[in-house]
Image 1 (cartoon, rainbow, N blue to C red):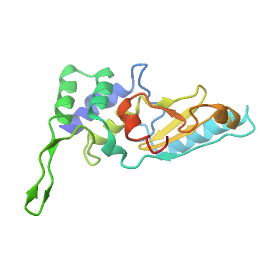
Image 2 (spheres, helix red, strand yellow):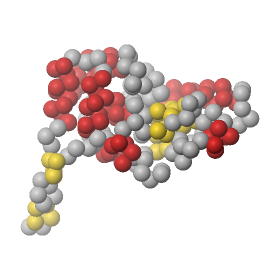
Image 3 (tube, rainbow, N blue to C red):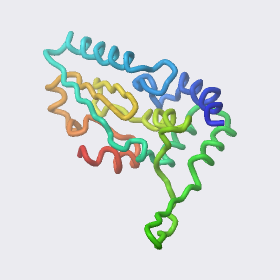
Length: 189
């Protein structure tokens, strides 16, 4: 069922995203994405920037446990913006809600806790869900570029002078969701 939902509904919806979501800068888990395409995009961006600037700063960020920090509410907000049938959205909402976890150690068992974040990497829906979740992550400074490959993000400032004068250079990114700010970027601030 997961593969069917991804291939028939989600992948086609990525081709015509709403203005608030960007998929062109994500090169993994898409039918047209690859590591080669990501490297070519980075090289092209750097080459273009070097035609107008003396040098360019390229920063690579690898978010640890990125799949574990995906906030279900934020993910579902992004899915709601895609052009998918209501029945598919409802299936996704059901898929990502209503899960709980407890821990058993020896003779003791913890109380149940609701799971409101994480996606399963090995599932058919997991990788494309990460792509949809990261689709609202944008560069904070106009003129900067992002190249996303799964949980690795490479912000490329237009020039070192622009980057150093930017108040957002400490992360290079402007998160558009509070869930992302609280989890993935807190180590960078």
